[in-house]
Length: 619
Image: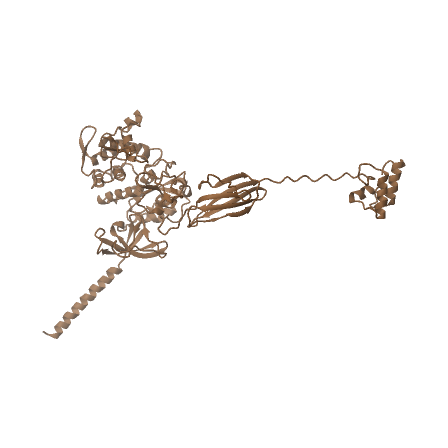
């Protein structure tokens, strides 16, 4: 065959290969897509698949990123060995101020939809503007209302607020460094965390609470539904949507009987509940799954539950779809089913809430009335999932629906999934966003595995009298910061202190010398992360009583020896003073100067003789 023919064929192949190669090059170089992480504490891998090691930061700490974290998707990769997470994104992202590249399972990232034109509404707080803008450019029909709580951000985390033991709970499966080490939450003597609720629930620490309370962490297209108004909206909430929420759960397509004996589906029951209460049926259905799980717990099986260690079964035939009254304890489900019997309620509440809940229908509708009256339509104005957990809208942090700090986040995902499946995300939703005073400049972050300990408490404190060995501090409590010792007689003391965390440091200890009056001794504990706590010892030392100086003697002219009398002896003392035999004191010299000329001489003595002879009556 003609050699020129083969040259042409080779040329065409090379040309096609070049074009394909260039097209691949340009495909890689095309604009990268963006996305948002949709789960908490997600591990980033060094390659596609869980068989690859976890990515570490520049300090050697494992990297975890959580809900709302923005990432840039470089490409999609199929995992070779991972049979559960088959597709992965190669991403680049910023972590602790530095940029990293790694791999994340696609199920944990929501890719941004196409951008649209939008108008930024008026009145958006400055700290929220970038977040609202990032949402509206994808969903311009969404509406935002900003609710001024009037609360200072820094006031939200004390033991009278969300820091109260048992009020803000995280599961045992969360990293241990999310847990609180405050009194009642951690035993420093044994180094163990104190479970706050059955099933392995622990109090979250301040950093974790701040992360879940900071709206900026959830102002993204994935999680914003925790701020959705929970009132019933007939235009966006319907039977089909409820069915999608129940899809795959124990309620999927299952029939129950209403109070009229009619057979209806669970989805029908939630619509009936919404119509009776003006509460979103999507919220009610999602709340059930959040509380009892997709397979249903003993709360909804009607088979009762064990009520003691012997396994006694009680409360058969009763249901509680929202775990109302399932307060913390060894058997919270039993507490909820006890409430379902109506025995703990007044006659008025039994009628109002359709108690007892001896059918699934009554439990769903009656429980919805309870939720509506107690939260969404109440004076507390807890008409979002966020406000039902963190009651910053009603001023009473103890009035919360759930202890689980992550419940609003979990439920919002269920709602978003339903709206997405129904093609409704471009509808006009309303979101109510809380506003706080003095928020941090940047969104609060979860503690990381490399986080330094924040434990700045003392395990023990001693104030010892060096002369007697007596310790003046008894019954030490690490949460008591001020110790008034009272009055002591000693001046020399030794201050000793032991931190609860061996990584913490203590200053202000050692030998001290007290001064008279009130003494203040400050013992400062500095945690590994630099946070400080000051214990103050106040002690009083009596002031020594100094006698008043004696009154100066009264000086009488002529009374040289100052014995209270003028005699010839006084004149003789003047002669002795002048002769140098005996010097007079300063006061004696003043008394001897009878002629008042400023000096003592013989003339002064002669005047004393004249006074004694009666020749003169005074000097």
